[in-house]
Length: 217
Image 1 (tube, rainbow, N blue to C red):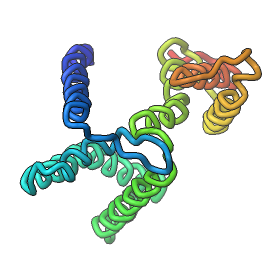
Image 2: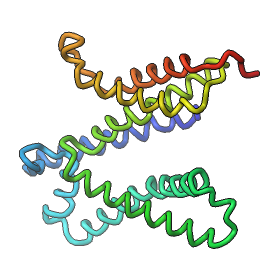
Image 3: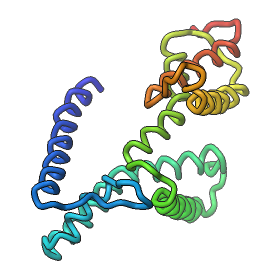
Image 4: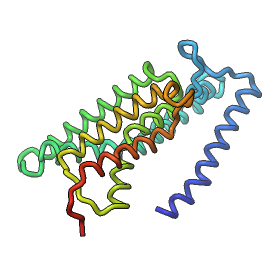
């Protein structure tokens, strides 16, 4: 994990460098960033250059194949995890000896279709670029995970497990409303991605409130 952290630094620098080159190219050849519903969509600059600036069919084909490969290199592991978790945790598929493989394939296909629908929905819902929007969404969804991980790491308390999901949901809801009314509550201050930390702290506090007296060994 530590070595991965060091490896990601040059990788992210390379991506930032490539992004800078992309915008430099657009400025040099006067390629305007596409706009959707009056807002600038920086996500569409790369496909605009690749597909609509006369670079040829071959370059456009390579772009599309690379985009699909990059997307599914992350999506396939997520789909596999969702399929396994839903099959075992919700459907208890291990206790069913008949048609296990067929059922898992059906669940995998359903989650794949759901992923496609979510991607299509993002086109019409998002006002900002995809990366910023995903980071904002993950600030809410990863908050409870951060709180649970830190509580298990820094304390030895047992918790009342049936209330954990309530704490997690309440942390997300409270963080959302806190983010909305932050300007009026904190004299104009607006939360950004740091709402993740607030979300995690709320989860940590909630877990502390539902702790049991006995301590894990």
